[in-house]
Length: 359
Image (cartoon, rainbow, N blue to C red; front, side, top):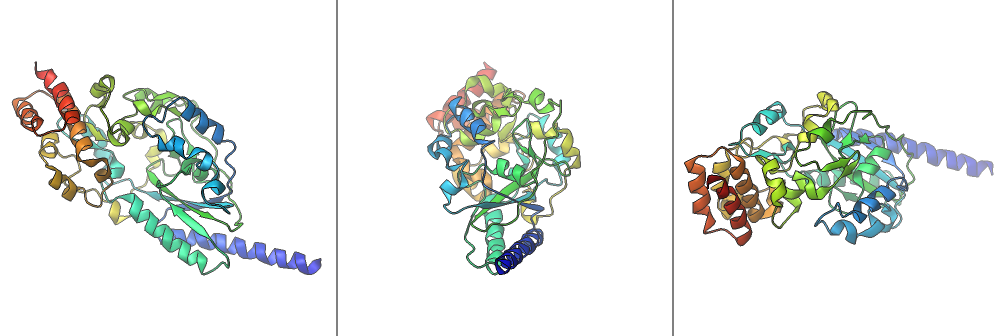
């Protein structure tokens, strides 16, 4: 009995040591924070299932297709009992110019997270390196790493791991750095000690709800993706509902409004990751300049960037809407007319909507 207890104490002591080491390695690899949690998401699953029942996922049918794998990690990766959650800040140096860009209807506004290198590949590679280091320390260590690439309730797991709390806009918030960061996860079978969950500090603030251009935050902690500009410009592959086009303004890829007004983002930290530095040809570029790209130029200019995944057709569709919202001038009208004949039926429809502002 004593020998067994002694052995158990040694195992626990070793796991505590490895847990501390994991967090140190994570920092060395460029992550700004790491936390560990168990796989119990029973408090979050009902909210997620209700969100699906209301159809708030829109055309993101994959959210429904995976069922409870998203809220039950062991169903996705059998044997999972712990999740290592990491955070990497992405706020670019020109963040203070974001609101200025939104006010200029001739400028293309792109969500600040998408101005640099595609975070998926960058973070996955770092998670693989972190996992290799852990593997050298623990016998029987098994894992799978994810970055917004599988059915994972990443914000719920990050909240449980102590990285922040889910705000009323459904983004994760951290009291020390705001919300401009990416998340990644490692699912593992090792019983690492878990961290204390974060607590909510939104209080009575409704700034994000009030500012949303399309009223997508239908209630605190409830976002109807079908109304969200990020969904409309990135996830939606069909025609953008007419009722939301004017409210989109010059936002052609994503939307940052709910984060820009969040009081906690006064504590946001500039990224130290060179890969997230904004590309000059994407940062506050003129709408007409981007609209003139043909498909080959689009693919070349967005290589290694998250924008590429929406494809050229959606890119043209989004810009056509933004041009319809810009100040009228003959150059824009001519550009729309010239592009119309070589466009797909979907893009033509949005070009015609934009041209309708000239009739």
